[in-house]
Length: 322
Image 1 (cartoon, one colour):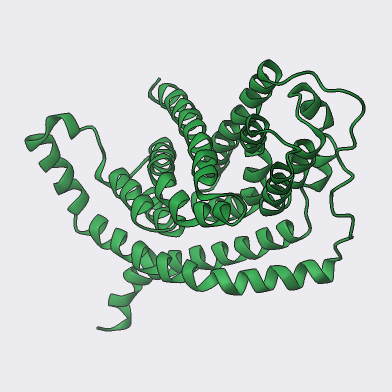
Image 2 (cartoon, rainbow, N blue to C red):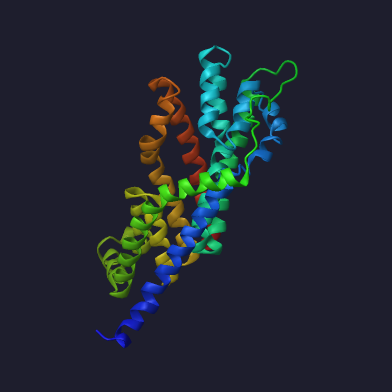
């Protein structure tokens, strides 16, 4: 195969894949630096009115502020307080739900800086929808706490238990580089084969053939685009890098519209979360709480999360089809 025969492959596959990998790696590195600098910590200082409205105690309020930069530390604080009898079971459950927004925002830089190089403007829509769902969970918990918990007595110091050490640019860069080196192999291992597979299937018309087969043999599934179904299935089977690569490939080659990619990612997010929760979140919770209590907290958290994600997905779908 001579150079002239290789040029189309370079233009349609190798060069866009290389640009995608470089952009994703740069985004991941920048996101790790932003996380290490604790950019969300100033938000913690603005949370006091919301905490008081939810009628949460000092410990639960401090855990909310702490969750803006360390959800694990927030859980440790709640666990210790509950073990001492300072925080009731009801308040513990509500505090765990209340921390949905700050816990999400810890990972927001990584998500945004990974999505943007791949999806462009649709990344902002997807991130905004998932952020909106997290905000809905926290606001719903504020109303629930105000209705179920007794009024607070006396003044509270919500920042007293927050870490006060300063983070320097040098220490943040060092920490970010370590995280980047740990996450980079998984990013590359998932991205390259998935992108190439999507390219091959698109190039040889396999998606078109699959859509025709669905329309003929399963009319009730004919409206599902095979490219979108692939994104959902990859969300279930692998980490976000795989589904993100598939979404980027389908979007760049015109297989899916931006709104279809966003809906596919949202559906994949909803369906894949329970398995990821069992795999990642339950062991962490079980380290702070008894297995039964850990399961109860996760169940309440995931039930509310699923409902809010379904709500924002449905609302966006109604907007997209009009």
